[in-house]
Image (cartoon, rainbow, N blue to C red; front, side, top):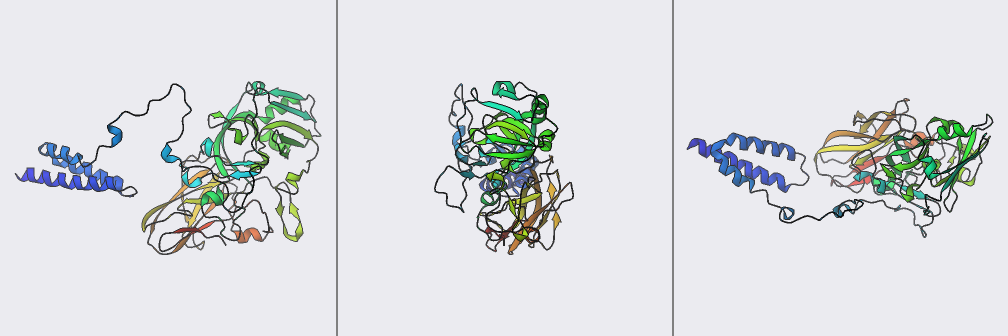
Length: 439
């Protein structure tokens, strides 16, 4: 009787813990609870087999177990669950845009579960709408200072040997609303002009080699086929190094808003140089100094001067969880976020729990790749006191992500300022509310 009674007691404990575990949706100890439940059930032995079966009844049978599921059509493009409909790109909540012709939408970084951004969530920027281009009619040409001008159809381009590479892409305007004061509420709004994907295409160097670059050629004009004819001057050195003519992303052809059927991709450089809907590369001996690289995409400097062609996106990081708009409860918290650098790999990420006075090293999650988002994690036990948290990235060149104050010593932060890679803080109140703490 004692063995039987002991078995019943163990199984009853198991039933209660199983019931408690399945009733908690966000319990960091849930896995431990389930593990102990299995141990208790095993200790009951054969004498308690019937009781174990009754204990399992504590886990209710869901409605989905009692009916047939949706039949799959013979042809379909898979979509996310309807329960994930809230995960989407969003426009800025700071600027009021009274038209849609020139606009951007942002990646929900706080809802991205790995380093690869799904194609439908890659941030998007357009200057005069998204064109609808028939790939069978699209032409791409290489001309200017070359020995042999070349013209390609898309059918021609996809026949060339291709490569697939993982890279981040960031708009130079990422974070421009939050230099000195907390204007944006969530990390999607502060840092969402950032994505990471697997890009597939032909190295630009392959086609330039075929065209024959003249020794006088130092720059190339990349121009798109959109209504704005967006164009940028790009050094030949970059094109011969790692630039790609991309036609696919994340295993499928480009989405229209991301440049279908062909775009330039310049790894590690500001997103506007990765010209979408690419129609030509014209080689020359100097930059073109277009409006997009004089009145736009330049950086104000001390003394009233402006810096041109600051292409590289310097090392940067941001905590995505916990971040603005979230609420915490005291106890174990895993701080998560992304770090990236346009000049190499991320070497380390540090976390501050006191507004930047002290720093502790976070754990980098593999893979850690060149010019790619790197996820970091840091285990923390929050005691419920008000605190300000932040992250700081260091890349393989030794460059350390600066504070906004350090940036101000060498640049003028006024107006519509690009290239914000300053350390970004989040405040957590005693009530657990997380807010933008910049400024």
